[in-house]
Amino acid sequence: MYPLHRVKVLLQTQDSNPLIINGQVPRYTVLGAAPRLLREGGLRELWRGNAAYMARHIPSTTLSFAFKDALLRAVLPPVHLKHGAGPTGVEGLGAAAATNMAAGFVGGAAALFLVYPLDFATIRMAAELRRHKRSEGVFATLNNTQRAGGVAALYRGYGVSALAIGSYKALYFGLYDTACAVMEQRAAAQHQDSPGVLERWGAANAVVVAASTATYPLDTVRKRLVADTALGPGRQAYGGVADCVAKIARSEGIRGFYRFYGYDTLLRLGGGILLVMYDEVKSHGVAGAISRLNPIG
Image (cartoon, helix red, strand yellow):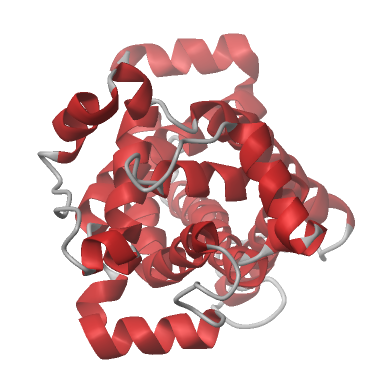
């Protein structure tokens, strides 16, 4: 899957790369990017940044689930949907959604903070054009960035990244948990069985599309800010989040924030499966989850 992620980041950031803007390097396309990377640097070029990606992605995903559940249990007030409860009030749908979304936001932002330098390195390496300069590895990327701008340089873009990832996780976890609670409530009211795996999977995919649509512009901004650091101090195109947003809006319009959005959303649909699997394991244990997942496996 990583080569698809590598292509996505390259496509998402290329419109701010000076070599592409000046016409020195032709633009990459959705269908042509992977074959072209193979021609330019061989198979390794498609996997460039994979080590940083895996070192970031696995703990980040695990921690975001753990932090979200811990917050729901220990910090935020428990809110339960009851049959007949209105959409307002402590036990209503609105309170449940707000609670779930707040836990998702804080959990996602906290998990990102712990692994952000690796996220930074992943984006830098995936966005780099091979002919721009000699390719660097993970440690060289982090070390050179730190030497040039201190530890703070490794966290450039964290604010907008926390907003992007936190908002995505808020919708990802919050809407899914709330949708499942609503389905459980409806099933109980109609004396039916709890929603099955396919129903939850459908809800999860709808949530992934909604979350991706709402947060994709922030994701574009954060990736361009990180990729921009490769140019070095004094040569960077963006002075910060506001400057990046203004320049994208002025030169590319609203489409600039949503470039290759469809490609990204297709890649994210795997997150719907992850939600359902986690939900099943948490509710029924590993053996029970395997048994329930059998019909679609």
